[in-house]
Amino acid sequence: MKPICTSCTAAAVALLCAVVSASIYAQAYPSKSIRWVVPFPPGGPTDLISRTLAPKLTEALGQQVIIDNRPGAGGTLGLGLAAKLPADGYNIVLGQLANVAIGPALYSKLPYHPVKDFQPVTLVFNSVLILYAHPSFPARNVKEFIALAQAKPGTVSFGSSGNGSAGHLGMEIIKSAASIKLTHVPYKGASPALTALVSGEVALHMSGPLPGVQLVNAGRVKALGVAGKQRMLILPNVPTISETGLPGYEVNTWFGVLLPAGVPKDVLGRLHTELMRILKLPDVQQRFQDEGGEVTPISPEQFAAFINTEIAKWDKAVRASGAKVD
Image 1 (cartoon, rainbow, N blue to C red):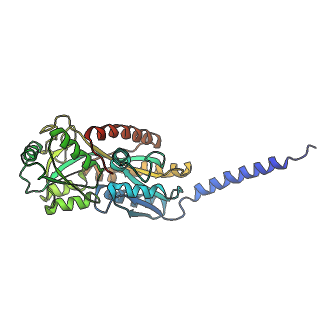
Image 2: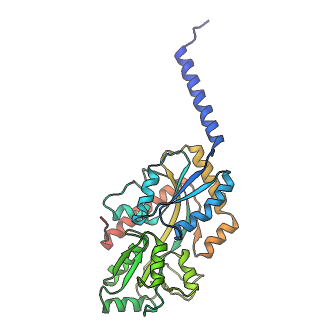
Image 3: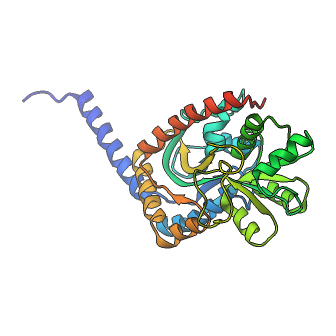
């Protein structure tokens, strides 16, 4: 009889234990509540999207998904926090264009790396931006707004959801293309910026349809232009910015689910499967479509490739606009 190799036996036992442990871990997940980090304050689009998906994920997983709003610095503070959380599947963050793709080009230092520090799960929502104005603002469209800004340099103010946000950069591109001077007032999210617009604290604000279109319909703000290739079905009488002032102008924004890098593949797969199912639910799709956006679920690999493409695209746009945040 051949002697038993104790080292081989130990290795086999260790391997078996690892396989069994991984299987048990995957079956047990989730065994406690899940933290969903929102890098912006309540009321803005990132928050509204998160609060639409979190209850559905709670139902699917059988564990509470708790929203944790962490606003500041154009969404980079919340993303920086999420990057340092344990990669165990119990920490989720909703990233978006501003803090994932634009931030690296605008900020000289970020508390995270948008690719190395995160595991993409799926793209969730995609929409164009809208240029909103206070009802008292005399311009009725972008052409009139540009003429006013040219006549009175620096007197027109615009609020943004923070330095480096999509709305901030969108306005910087308008400034550069139209050769005008505007006064930028950054806030800690789209909701505070919209509140400032409604109160007349600022004259303009650029952000997505959530929740600005509701304010337009209520007559509390007006829409000067849509930053897409074509008019929106929910705002059919609002021309595109390209139509009324800046030919070829287009700025889209998007939102996607990310995890801290290193989450086990089984856990990533479970979360992706559930989110894909949730995003295909008629009530979820209708909710997002009513707000002028498109539900865009894709694979983790597709989302990773999309992020890399967006980073390269916006690096060029930021350099061309000359915008920079220290």
